[in-house]
Amino acid sequence: MVSDRLLHSLLALFAALAAGLLLLVVGFIAQEALGLLQQLGVGAFLFHGEWQPYAGRFGLLPMLLTSLLLMLGAVAIATPLAVVGAACINFYLGRHSAILARRLVEIAAGIPSVVYGLWGLTLLVPLLAAIKQPGASLLAGMMVLALMILPTIVVVVDAGLRALPTHYRENAEALAIRRSGFVFAIALPAVRGSVITGATLAAARAIGETMVVMMVTGNLVQLPGSLFDPVRALTANIALEMAYAMDEHRSALYVSSLFLLLFAVALVLTNQLLLGWRGRHG
Amino acid sequence: MVEAATIAPPLGARSTLGIDTLVWGVGLALLALFGLLLAEMFAAGLPVLSLEFITGEASDAGRSGGISAVLVSTLWVVALAVGIALPLALGTALYISEYLGRGSTLYRLIHGSLDVLSAVPSVVFGLFGNAVFCELLGLGYSLAAGALTLVCMIVPVMVKASVDGLTAVPTELRAAGSALALSKPALIGHIVLPAALPGVASGVLLGVARALAETAALLFTSGYVLRMPDSPLDSGRTLSIHIYDLAMNVAGGDRFAYGSATVLVILLLMINGAIALVSSYAHRRTTDS
Image (cartoon, rainbow over all chains, first blue to last red; front, side, top):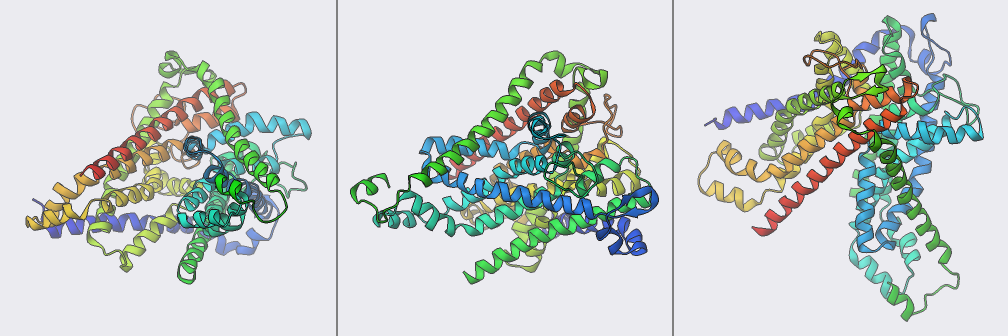
């Protein structure tokens, strides 16, 4: 039989390895990025608009703004719909239809992003193209991303609503408060922590998403003038150019992934701090 | 609720009919939308499925023939990733739950690190994998490099599920083990692990699902060669990359893109079903005892 000490050290080793993965990832990305970052300075990436890798110009501004717009648009579309959807499942649908609806939402949340991209590319883009060419656009990206993150927000808010104490509802019934009044004045405000968590997780997913934006936004590097303009997101740029990028160009892609990494991590940490703060202060 | 409203007419004169209609409208529209999208996928994809499609060799850049090479590549990547991640995740979960106190700094550190890791965008993992596994370890574009990249992505979810399984083990079982003066390794091996098996199994299934769904991290680690791999050191494309390539880069590839998407979603639904079975089994077992 293995001795306790041996097992303890073995498991500690595994845990150290698992916890160290994050450091490894951040470390290697930074190592590939830092040389060029130091050489050109952060400003050359963040505040310049020209992306001409062969001329040594690595302005990420248009793609950075595109990524932010895509994220904000998707979260703005998806969050209210998801919150109302979760309320509908909890307080409007009957017991059995609610179970069915939850299964459908879980299935939708588990569908790979490449399938959402396929839907967007074959169903939504032609529809938008009929309104205004070329169809593959900022708006298409926002809409498909919204669709992709919506189930995740519903799942989180739904879990919050189900965890509400039953006496909330009993008291509301005793006061003859209508269902809609209970939902919007009592239940939803009580789960705003879940709404924030759901929206933040969704935002992190949206800004990090590659396949959907690559498939439906047209991938043209430019500052979007309108919702119908084709654009290229930071993630899509990495995926599109990584296959042939060399030297400085390759390093520039690592720099952009470092920005992505920091942004997504900051989002999640902010959310945890908010939750921790709320947990302590009510 | 309904009874209450009929017994006592609610205060406030304005009708809430508008709000109720809005909630019903949004809720049902959303459910209908997802239902329709799935129906659309199956309608386009199911007619493509056949024995020839599953077992045949791809020809004409994937527009015709089958996806056997894609399925074999997917199997390699997923099996390797989950096989390597399992001991790592299980070991970590055992260390966290059996050796560390819940409030300890180390516990929070490991947990926090895994939480942040799960927030890292997949394309970033792809770049990491390319730099470390393809270049530094010299694996090149290969199924093994893709699998190792996926290991980093699925460890957090597998640790979380395993820890949940371990904490669900009834304290009486541990107490009984300690009363028999079992050593810690014996306690873990004979009592805790068998009891936590459903949680560990859920973790494995979740890991498989995550690995199956991943695309961006594999684009420049396992590559997209559409050939039957001879070994995990060959490059190969998984189902999700096949869907992307057919939809984006192959004119007239939509039909087979939907066929492949249908296969992928059916696989994921089977995994979902298996997770539900495992957890209902675990629930029955704890409520019976």
